Image 1 (cartoon, helix red, strand yellow):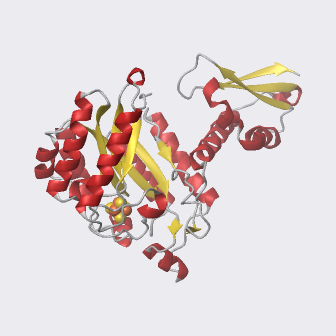
Image 2 (cartoon, rainbow, N blue to C red):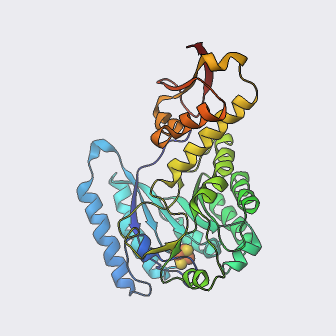
Image 3 (spheres, rainbow, N blue to C red):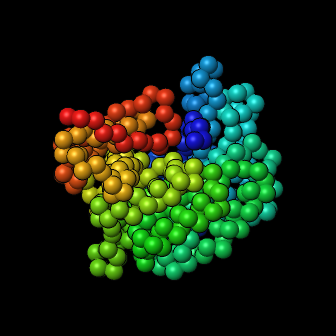
Length: 350
Ligand code: SF4
C-alpha cells in the first residue's frame, strides 16, 4: 500500500470556479473566502495560512505537502496564481513543505497552465472528475464531458505529477453500474489516489431546488454504502484503496439546516469498509462451511489495525455471521504482522 503524505489544506472556497456547480457549496463544507472575493483577500488568506504552517513546523516531524482545495486553483487569475505559488516555493527550500498539491476542474488544465506550474514544486493535481459518464456530467451541468478528464490526466502525467481523481456517487442520472464504471475508469487511468464522495443536498444549492421540486432524489445511506462496496473492492484489488470515502465531518456541515437530504454520515468510509468485510466473509462462507459448524467456533483472522471495521459497530458483523450462517460462535482476531487486507477463516471446537 502507498504511504500517505502529510497534508496541510488551505481552503479557497470557490476561488477560480467558473460557476457554482449544482451540488456544491464550499462555504458549508470548509473555510470560506466567498466566491468573487478580491484576489488580495485570497492572497492574504494564503499568506496567513502559510505563515501559521511555518510557525507550527517541527523539524523532526518532516515536511508537509500544502494543498489548495475548495476551488478551481488553475483557473485563478494568472498573476494571483503565481503570487500564491511564490509564497509556497521558498517553504519547500526551507524544508517546511515537501511540495504543492491542489484541486481543480479537468477543463482547467492545459499546456499553458502546466508550463506555468512547472516552475514550482507541484507534486499532485487532484481533479474533480465526479463521473466519467457524459450523461451524468450533462445532467449535473458540469460544463465538460469525460474527454476533458482524459486530456487533463495526459497533461498532468506528461509533467510527472501525481494524479488524484475525485468521484461522486448519486449525481442526477447516476446509477450503481455507471458509478462503478467511473471507478474502473479511474483505476484504468492509474490514478495515484481516488476519493469517493456521495452527493448530499446542501441548502442554497441548485440541487436543493431540484430536490424540493421532486426533480432530484438523493441516495439513502444504505444505498450509498451498497454502491461503494464494489467500488472499494475494485480499488483494493488494484492495490490502491480510496484515500477517502464520504465528506470530512465538520461542525459547520453538521449545523442543523445545512444538509437537506442525502447519505451524509460522519463515519461513512468506516461503514463502507464494515459492509465490505461482511460481504467478503459471507462470500468465503458461501464457498462451504463444515457441517459441524454449530459445534465450532469460527475465527476470522485479520490485520490487527483493521479489527474495528471487521467487527463493525455494536459487533454488527459478528451478529450477522452467527445469524446468517447459523454458527455457534464467531470471534475476530487481529494479527500484528499482517499488512494490507488479508484475512483467514479458522474453525476450532467449542
Ligand atoms: S465542484 Fe469544484 S468547480 Fe464546482 S463549484 Fe465546487 S469547487 Fe468549484
